Amino acid sequence: MSHLAAELSRLRAAHLYRTPRLIQGPQGPRPLIDGRRMLAFCSNDYLGLANHPQVIAALKRGADTYGVGSGAAHLVTGHSSAHQALEEELADFTGRSRALLFSTGYMANLGVISALAGRGDQVFEDKLNHASLLDGALLSRARLRRYAHSEPEALSRMLEGEGIRLIATDGVFSMDGDLAPLPALARMARSADAWLLVDDAHGLGVIGEEGRGSLAHFRLDPDQVPILVGTLGKAFGTSGAFVAGSHELIETLIQRARSYVYTTAPPPAIAEATRESLRIARCESWRRERLQLLIRRFRAGAAELGLPLMSSPTPIQPLIAGSAERALAWSRRLDALGILVSAIRPPTVPEGSARLRITFSAAHEETDVDRLLKALGSLKRGDHLSGLAAVP
Ligand SMILES: Cc1ncc(COP(=O)(O)O)c(C=O)c1O
Image: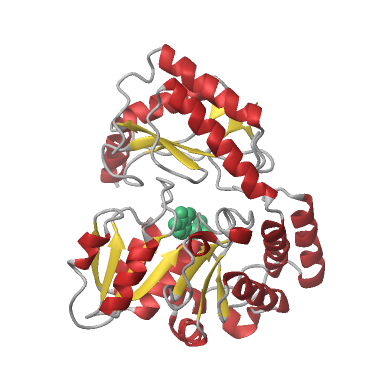
């Protein structure tokens, strides 16, 4: 296995080696990491629900009622009334006939794409789609065709051919924070008689009325976007994912999505916790308002400092470094100041676009944003931000 050691050395030398940090306690803006209290700007707990007392209480009640493990796959004896209630509430939330739970967003995307497309079909994907959407297409054995980021015209030139044609896109791009051009994609899908799948992992809970996400933001209905994927481990602060759509779509997934059929159902107590976090996310719109306030404050301060931000209206505010080495250096410098922002490097993002992926949560204070800006300012003055890459 010496070639493994050689490859690990190569990753280290290229500044692409990754290691998990040890977090000692709950998620939140001030996690205890490797024994140090940090101010963190890199979780996806956008609404601050991952450690919410009512969500924790719902999890405990769920465990008292259902125990810990679900014990079996949904189609055997793993599907509890907690799962069923959550699916019905997610269908109501998304304005669709049905919803189906998966254990993770990664599994939802593998399952839905490989259930709907196969050999002889085509899956069209934005170049910056999340890895799970790309992997779903590869697993399906359909032909994967990638179009330039957010360029519906590039897609329209490809959208011909026989068989099923499925267009799949992030709603909010996970590493850039921008919104996909969904109205144009929906028009294109309709005129080409193709299906449109939107993975709104970073939009649901965060944007649109009641946090209904990118589709609500653009006022798109289920006819225009028949397949909606949502995740529960980000704004909803728990774990898992779902696909929402028509009765026929969900029945097809129950028969054919292998990552639904051949796996143990998630713990019912997690479903109970998610029911509570969904309720809070829907009705506590102050969390979304607070996020917008923090985003505005950050963007205004960053502009004053002359930092080149991307045009993101969401809590994902990347600062492009260019090389992996530079992104790591910035992240380390912030770390020394007690601020945690992880460096995102290839292959998660394209070569030459390594970055600090700064994210905000409704649990942050305005003074937290000021502290981050001050730290970025000191980096800039100390010339650590010299040679900032141009925004692509
Ligand atoms: C757009 C997108 N889809 C799917 C996923 C996967 O979701 P999960 O973390 O629940 O597997 C992620 C992030 O992890 C994501 O950013």
